Length: 80
Image 1 (cartoon, one colour):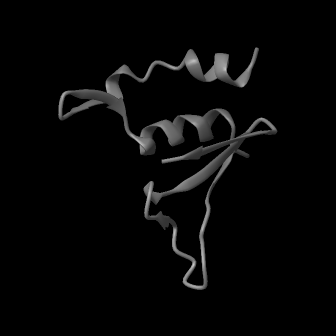
Image 2: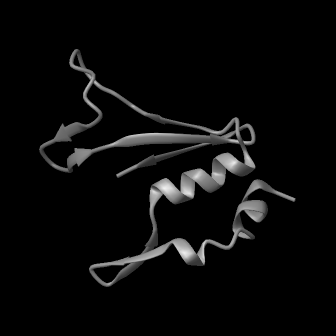
Image 3: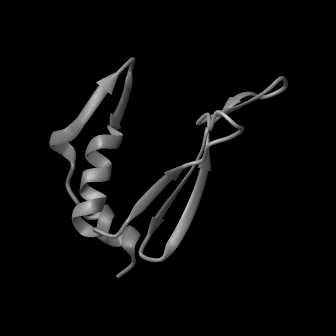
């Protein structure tokens, strides 16, 4: 069974929240469930420049944050 299939079977309904008309699972609860199933999982927030800021700014796209999550030997990158 894949990591996705294992995590997808976890019932988190009692931790679902509503905010501004959106239903979501907070990062805190989601990450706790991941670490229970995969204690070696890690996440990384990329930092930039001499000040090691956790974001970059581009005049055309605005502020960007880059992260990655490694789980079961597979790394997924995300930017927001």
